[in-house]
Image 1: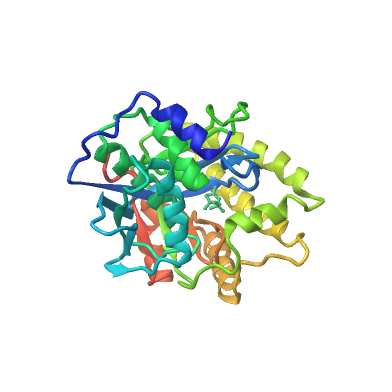
Image 2: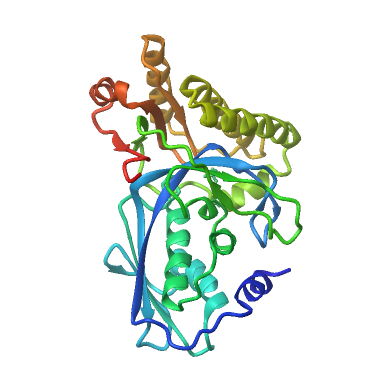
Length: 332
Ligand code: PMV
């Protein structure tokens, strides 16, 4: 199946007749505690391994769509009109091609993100999730959460987890067309849970996660990653259900380190960390050794996300004054 076939099969009974004047939706960013790394189907973003994330509360993207008055799509990011050949615009327009009611229908898309784009902070996840939810509202499809999550996954894999706040499970599924591969929220509410974003660089990552994943599949130790990812996924799921913070933190940190070690086995090695990233990792470990329950995780970028509970918030703010703290359960 191609992306368009999946979209058509989901939208088969839906009409595009009279869209609203506009639709605007917010989606949170999400941070994987057990990472998705590697695709079994590149076209459909079907992952090789299951993953589990936590969403970042009020940190994320708001997408507003309406019909464009121009003969082409218009994309505005944080109030700036982007050029047609901008990589982000090209990717977005390709995705919008899947949803045009007619070939001469163009979209005006405004994205406002309160997190730096392409800095390994999963902003594309929030963006594609909000875009799909906005399309659903705009055309009044009223799709269920499962179908919306599948559509978001076609834009960016991890976007299928950004439809919800809190912890979200994304099982790799078994269907080769990915119809059983979508996000599912946990009912756990953990008010004390915190994620701190430690911004080390706001520059775009050195290599896209899409390309890095593709290269990593060729690593001789990729099968070992899959084995570990499967075990970590089960342990983190259990830790979330039991609200066992130490277990969750230990496994999440070791999972992120394993993903970055795997990246170094690619030839030439893929290194997202900067010198400052490694220093910050050491600081986290030192703080932990001095008695604060704190762990880090790192995605495809130089920044770190720190995991801790509200009881450690003041100590951590003193230690890392630049930290941006997300409260994943503040809206529950
Ligand atoms: O969904 P993508 O293509 O942006 O890839 C996300 C990859 C990681 O952020 C590193 C891991 C994850 O599960 O979110």
